[in-house]
Image (cartoon, rainbow over all chains, first blue to last red; front, side):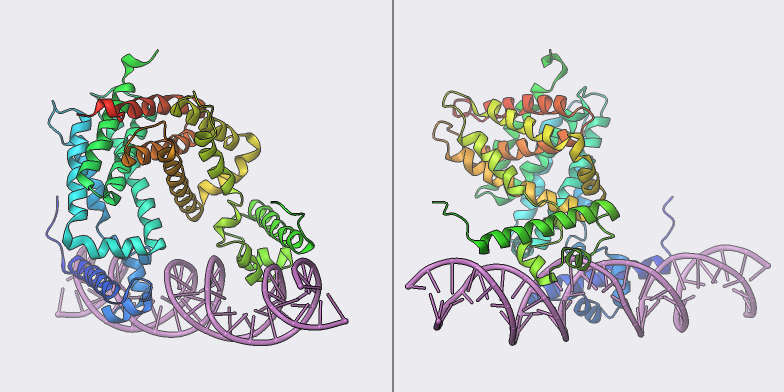
Length: 195
Length: 195
DNA sequence: TTTTTAAAAACTAACCGTTAGTGCTACGGT
DNA sequence: ACCGTAGCACTAACGGTTAGTTTTTAAAAA
């Protein structure tokens, strides 16, 4: 199905990557707010309109590969072994994501995000989107008989766990703590618990 | 403490109210995106800079009294009778807030919010702020011995409940469902549960 | 190969939210 | 009555974003 990518698509991808790389470099060098869209476009040697044809907003330049994040979450649900229960699988993936984000190499980026209200806000919206995808994946699992509301709730709780852990002094311990709570919540939503 | 408000303060408050009223009216008449800041300022007969001295952003014009929301949430925790457990008190207040927001009279406003990405995003940020306040209030209660992480988690969960319920087909049932889960999560975070 | 098409990128010019700088007016404390 | 200052107006701009249009260039048709 995936035909060998033609020159056109390769060039497009290259342009996109060049823009993203340039943007991140400038942002880290001079600070997110100190770098304008016009600066990024000039340094990447593209027109401003070209930049916006690849990225929907300035913030999107920073969260370039957020689709990975989303896929990893849903895959943790849809791709788990048939006998593995939902919550531990989710916990494992969230833990991996938290480790990934709190690694030393990622620190400058997250410092930048924390310092910019606009980036923080953008990330919040992303997280909500991810929670929705996750909720859909959970609701689609035939082995889990829960209400739509319960599925959406645990999805949000899992994203909350990720978010809280990233801010916590001991991120891994925070994942443990919150997922212990989520496990109980998920149990309480099981059909046999409801009158 | 509250001295009789002088003319100056009354005028200021009147200006603020006039701006907010005008803005909401125009937004509902013509749509949020179709109305510019300059339109609102002109119709309210104030300068654009005056408008921004009363409201930090265009979105803030819509969520004029969001501090009420925050106070009601924290009060539900700090002002409850000494023998009332946390979660039911929280549930009661969230239910009241959901009822308030899903009332027919509020429908046009929330439709407008749902249709504007910018307003949705702004509300998400607000909710996160509210969750933080709520977490602080919960953590400050001497009767509840839980970790900081657990307090922050239930606060987020409660806000999630509000958010999910507002979108649910049956909002009140959704509050019930999610709070049953929250109750279990809170129990699981109790000190005696931890090894 | 040549021609045709359509995507990708460029350029211009603006729109809109937001802010800085500045000065005027009128209320409140003395 | 007098002065300090809070509230507001005004101009001008900045920075993200978009519309409209035109040029390039890869891919498909001839």
